[in-house]
Image (tube, rainbow, N blue to C red):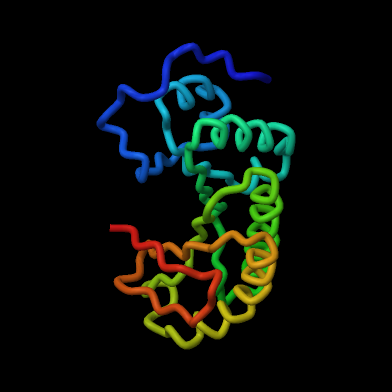
Length: 178
């Protein structure tokens, strides 16, 4: 599908080039021309179901059209039902699989970064940060290695955490949800 937008870029002073607008993938496809016309920098959200059926050619088109307008694409990976530090090993493994699928999609979309949830929740882990960290350390090296290969930083987002502790990794950056 080609963009048919006839609106000129610019003229929307309220939209700073540094602002990313979180938009689910399906909505971006539905409102593609509008997003381009308004000069929106999308944070494309891809959930697990979408990742299982996504067409790489659509991702390539999104990249081409947004890059042609000097618009910045970021990506938000799946998070529902996932946790990279889960005590449930099957859930942790499903998280790794989902994050790998997100990185595969990113290889076509070309985002400048990918938001992935860190997964610590004091209530679920009863304050046992060490247990969560040990489980997380089984997950992140695999994901960070692939992210490094693609040269895409991972933005580890806090949700329930008051602060997020990150190990020194060049591909891992904090993403603070205020």
